[in-house]
Length: 389
Image (cartoon, rainbow, N blue to C red; front, side, top):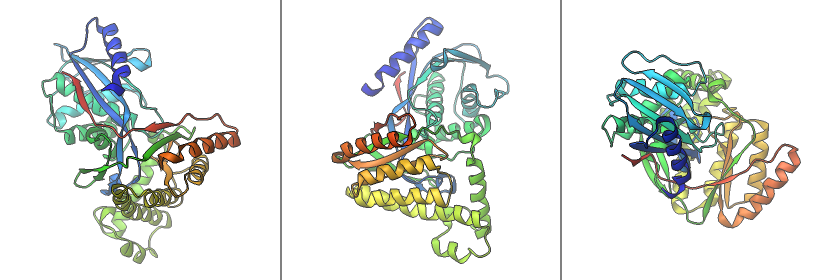
């Protein structure tokens, strides 16, 4: 809990300021970084995320009335107050209130309890950088609200599905389950090889001499307003064309055999998913062996595929990835991570190469003429949990 102490204290103080007493429940859910395996989750494929030390803390106490009152500590204590004994309406698109309302509406829809509650929440996941601040908030809200209603150990798979449902029906993003599963099931000092069809998450030990470097590109991203939903629709179109239930069931031979009659853009989207699934499994095996060279090769190939076949990178991100890979050499690799169109770059690098990475980043920002973005080290961390209650 040591990494979360400042965040916990800030959230408790906000709750006390709002309601005049201490909370009964404290729930935490982390953000995540995806080391490899992007845009595979909604295609029933594979991904290799790990939960991070950043996250969201929700403080909560029961309320006798059938209402949920929520205060957003990071937004000047902005308030929402919604009844839960009637259909819960969405707020305006882009409003933080939709996260609270979506979880409150989704819990009973998935068989989990909800009751009146007072909430305050705060987070330290960098927003707009692809580190899943949204999933962190959704999972933490679900964990807190079920605890208030008397369920201290809800099924985390169900919690993840509630958070995804909230994104689809209230927030407005047709996301897969990768972010929510990673936030719910993260393990200390490990990544997770996630099978997005079975939702099994197998821990993969992170090499002791390797470091995760997370670098914001300086290009803000917004999945709801981006072409994310369009890419998802193209993947469905590809699956229908190739006659498979999802692109998970398509192999490279089947893909290449059907290229001639397939729309060129749709074919490229499918090729990314098919090859990314193979890369992700290879990367997990390399990580388990401590083979940073092979892991790095897979990460570089992943970025090229996301750039050229899935077309979700941007020139500023490509240049940043190139700078990092030049500094890393054979001791790891770098790639864009997340939905794309900006956000973060992730690198896995031997600890001894960190000085070279620092120099390369300083030179990169100087060469672009844009403000330098502060990078950080990601710590593979434990998943969602109750801290109190």
